[in-house]
Length: 265
Image (cartoon, rainbow, N blue to C red; front, side):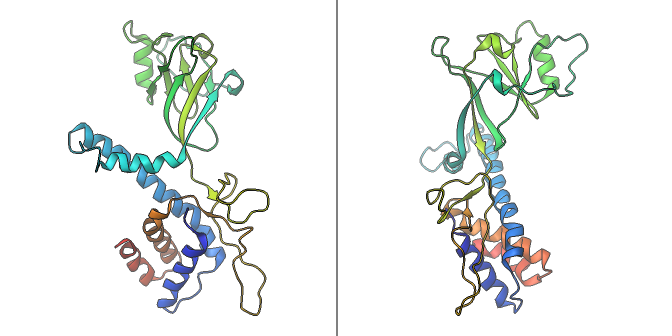
């Protein structure tokens, strides 16, 4: 994953080119997580665009496919979890369907680190593997529920994705082995933490640079409390562009703002 020390040093050196030189760890850390999230979100958006391109026959190659490239990137963040009756949350959210609809279901809570849901499926081997149709619009869901042709059944279940996840027909009648695959939100990676192996995902922390007490050689990074970025190394230019631009705007440094897009060149 991308070294936070390398990014911090590069950003600080870039600021020094303009004789600013005051990108402190506090300033850097205040933008590190947001910059990482922006890079991640842009890749996610590119997957949507690449899927649309492939549907139009613009991206047909499996060798040079843009879609496959970005999906390989997102596979670093893919997780599959069981969702069970124990994860039901109350109260039911305020979603309102058409008058007269009877909705016998309760919403499942999304995992706290869920960025977007990839699929929901029934993992019960006795019933066979079944994908749920994913619906993101309450009006579409209401129309499906009213239809005699498309109403959810045990064989063709549907999941409404909102702030929570609602299963149709009710979860108990489908299976108690429902699984969800999703992309997690990027967090940070350990460097030399005494409680976790190196490069472990630290879902409770954001990328940050921590400095040790000043020595004869000045302050040096404290690798035990610092956290690397949760992005693969080949995303270094994109991350630099984001964080340099954000810090430049905050410091009102026109040089950093101007040079940020050129970092990826």
